[in-house]
Length: 140
Picture 1 (cartoon, helix red, strand yellow):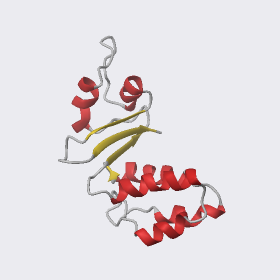
Picture 2 (cartoon, one colour; picture 1 turned 135 degrees about the vertical axis):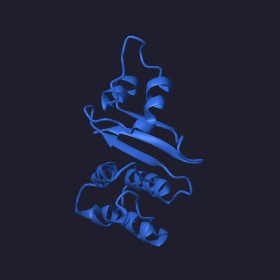
Picture 3 (cartoon, helix red, strand yellow; picture 1 turned 30 degrees about the vertical axis):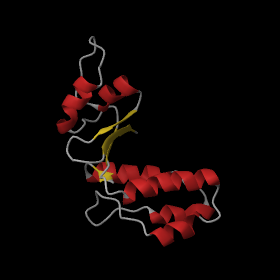
Picture 4 (spheres, one colour; picture 1 turned 45 degrees about the horizontal axis):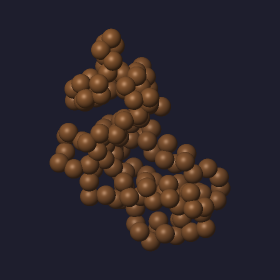
């Protein structure tokens, strides 16, 4: 799993880490980090993960497992985190403008507001850039 660019990856990392508030979740937050290329998440060691979730609530364990699974998956999941005013990746223009069935009265402008109008703030889609995985847009 990784961002479509360094900015999106950094924003996604912040969202993931912010999911686990409090001093007792420090070890859990520390599991989630970006690799040296600053776009991909580092794979998480299974034993480290098991140790970090021990003693956490069932809800926190489930959420952490979802992130862990996406990060360690053989499939590559690309995340694009943008604001309503930022342009989205131009490679995704066709997906956003045609596949999302935007209201015919709405003219897309190539920014996050298009995703917001079509989906209410986020979208997960089969990744057209890869043979496996998904593409996810999230508005911050």
